[in-house]
Length: 390
Picture 1: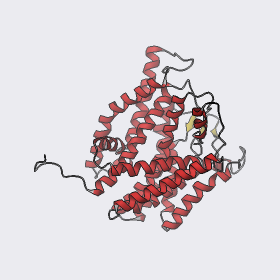
Picture 2: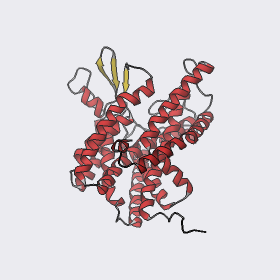
Picture 3: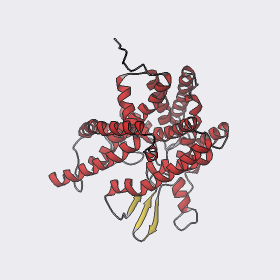
Picture 4: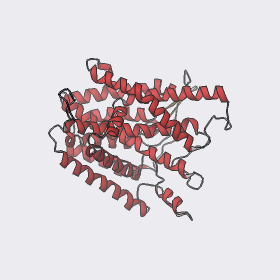
């Protein structure tokens, strides 16, 4: 039954935008799970790619699930930038906003985010991670938005498809290109001073390609775009990406380290799925972006299901959630060490991945209320300029 005061059914535009927030909310939960693992399961460290012969399946697939996070975040950042331009004054406003917000994220990575990971002031090591990569990608996109859309798509495809040709290119410390290349493609260490080093955990070149393609998706999500056409295009592009992953991976083709056969079918499958994130290989991006686009399509088609609304709340204030969960996890770890001591060598940690999952679920439930409150504040107070940056 409905009443005269009932909220009207959301329009197609609302569903279109809610699907974006819902996808962002889902990968935020995957990120939370991975960061709980990095906080309370660090005594079982994993590499990139992982050691299939020594990594238990529950840990392997939990980590693999988190692979969706960064590609989806970056793709949706590009898409959201296009939607921002549609809402305001076009490319000039988009370019200015991207440049300012990109700088803001870079500063945030060096300060608030890095302190949340290290609790060290002044820091001896600064980890340039996903917020840094998104920030630099936004600054690059501030220039790329002026390209015609076909040229922008070409730039994105060439970067994503071609950057693995550069995998064997390295520059030693002391070389004039070492710093630039460590930032763009070759994960490594940069010595800033005798007392500080930078770790380029997320080389940014492939992420620039991803954000460019995200921006190029924008017209499919415009106010006047046909939903059925959008969903068909999303399905086609997603399936092409996944077919490219399967074809290249089965053939041990270009874009990834070879997989191996194991006596166990499960381990062989794990080897097939064992792909490189730092920097993200072609196959890594084909798999994760293909899955991300399928989820985006599915969330829009799900309409106004209650669980979509819950995910959309989590994705409506992603930067607030990101900062909040980092500090909650750090404080929780410090309190656990104080209460229980170190129970796994130099770490305090859980004994199983089941406990990691349970902790992530409980934290998600606890964080939902403050994130919802901040998202409502952000939606209500559009006159507060700085809220746009969170």
